[in-house]
Length: 195
Image 1 (cartoon, rainbow, N blue to C red):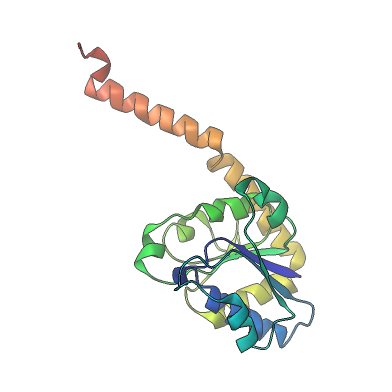
Image 2: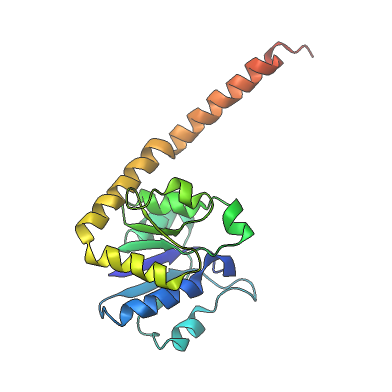
């Protein structure tokens, strides 16, 4: 089983928490692997090789260089579980990371921190899984639940994909923006402006 993360390695992304949770899983399950897609860009970004070495898991954690966005679906489909382990900080509370809907669209079990928009998009054990932010034990427990219940996890992953298609596809979002703009123009009378 491969747990995957793709994106920024910035501190608020929670990669050290993911590595801690993964380390706990490896004590029980020899067949799990962790793949992290990204590249250190800032001095504060997580040093994945150092984190792997620190927990003695260099052979079970792969750092994969970033790929162009158009190749994300192919890359993400190679994983069994996708994870967004964000920490509890202002950035996580304010942002709605696109990777959440990208991950869900893959139809795979997706685990996210229960913070900000992620806890609105994901309904725990319905279309995805939520774990407490910055809590390696809770993340490990959630990942273990997925490992122990693969059929159920696949159903939840399938529900996530279905919901993304129904609520977050470009067509759906584009139609919603068009309707909202039409209401604004009609309400403001902007369509009747002379100029």
